[in-house]
Image 1 (spheres, one colour):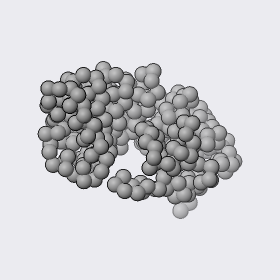
Image 2 (image 1 turned 45 degrees about the horizontal axis):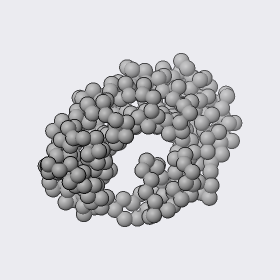
Image 3 (image 1 turned 120 degrees about the vertical axis):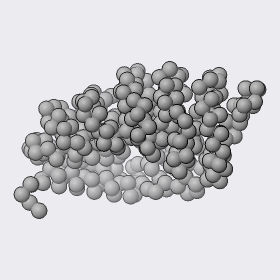
Image 4 (image 1 turned 45 degrees about the vertical axis):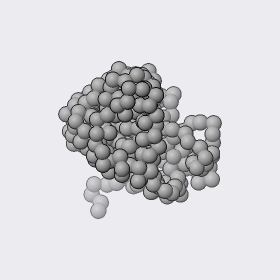
Length: 322
C-alpha cells in the first residue's frame, strides 16, 4: 500500500476489496490496524483513481458491524471522512457517505462530536440526488442518539424534509421517509408537525397509496404511526384518511422482486445476485454465504401488512381505553 508505483497501490486496494467480501478475508484484515491508517493516507492524499479504490475498500470493510467496531477506533477517521466528503468528487463522496453511515450506525458519539449533523444538513442542498440520499441516511443514523434527535428538533428537520417527499427521485423520497421515521419520535417534533399536519399527512398518504414501492410504503406508515401519538394529528387522520389507509394496496411477492431501485433490470436485479453485481441496489431477498440477509420478500410483505394494521390501530386509539 506504500509502494511508489501508483498502479501497485491501486491493485492492492482492489485485492483487499475482494478479500473484504468474505468472512475469512475480513478477519485477516482486521488483525492489521496499520491497513486502516494506510487507507486513510491514500484516501486523503493520493490521486483520484487510487482515492476511489481505497474508498471502496473502506466502504466494503464497514459493511460488517464487527469490522466497524474496530475501524471506528482509527484516529480521526470520522473527522477525516467528513472533511473529504465536502470537497471530493461525487463518485468518491458517495462512497464516503456510505462508509460514514455504517460507522455511525455502530457509534454515533464520534460523529456528533465532529459536527457531522451540521455537515450533513449542508449536503442536503447538493444538486445530486445520490449525495442527498447519502446525507439523509447518515442523519438517520445520527438521530438514533438522543442528542441527534434534539438537534433535529433544534434545526426543525421535520419541516425541512417535507419538500423531499415530493422529489422526482424515488431514492430521495425513500431516504426522506426513513429519516422522518427518526425525527418524529420526540414530543417536540410531533407538536411541530401539528402546525403543518394537513400538508405532511397528505404527502405521506399519497406515497402510501400511489407508490408501488413496499420500502417507501413501510417507511411512510411508520412516520404516520409516530405522528398519531399527537391527539390533533390522530383526529385529522381519523377524519380524513382512515378509509384511504384501509384501501392501501400492498404488492404480492409475485409482483415485487425485492428491490426499490428504479432500473431496467427488473427481476434479474433481485434474483440473479450470483451472476450480477449492481452496486447501490436496495434488495431484500433470500441470500446465502458470508453476507446472508435475515429477511426475505415474504416476511417483508407480511411485516408491511402488520404495519398497516398498526396504523389503523393508532388512528383509532383512545386514551381512555386499555
